[in-house]
Length: 247
Picture 1 (cartoon, helix red, strand yellow):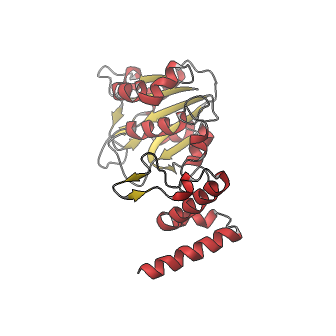
Picture 2 (cartoon, helix red, strand yellow; picture 1 turned 45 degrees about the vertical axis):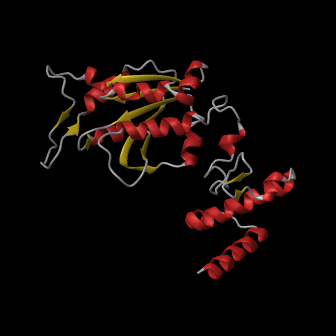
Picture 3 (tube, one colour; picture 1 turned 30 degrees about the vertical axis):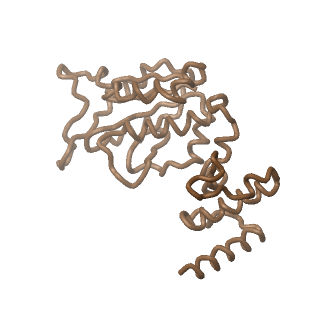
């Protein structure tokens, strides 16, 4: 995969893209990055990329020409890549969206600043708009980093264990089950016996039950789209009974 990032602050990405799992993915040739400062494509003597909005109002708006020119100058592998605008008005980012983007060969991420973008960027350049949550950041760089991290880790060969991404929270539709490691007893807190039993079928059943419990407790909204089996319904009834006893 090749990811182009249009930003006014390319240096913000140096540490993130060069470290940890993403850095190793680059070393393996699984992904490459191209951070472009679209200020370099400004057409005025002061290299400004923003201007006051027509009609008045507070803040400044990013002008269309520098961003259009920057994208038109990209060494694209695909002449019609996904061009993603990071903005609070976009589609709420999700694991499903990350999985879809991980299927692409090439992505272009646009990191905005100031009050917003000239609407012609949205109408004539962008294919997707993404928001990482219902809050506003000073710029799109942090959002772009979150999208990059979540997408790159899904690419084949990036994670040491390919099953890790398959069982992540949201990948299965449920939150992930609890994890334990050595020691088996820590400060009198013991790992559940089933995980020490070596009985794979029972372990799998326990993990599914606990994933369902955690989702029911913390994100019950996710169960609205989950098709419950008869066993799931029995477990949820047990969770509710336990909760009533503890109240």
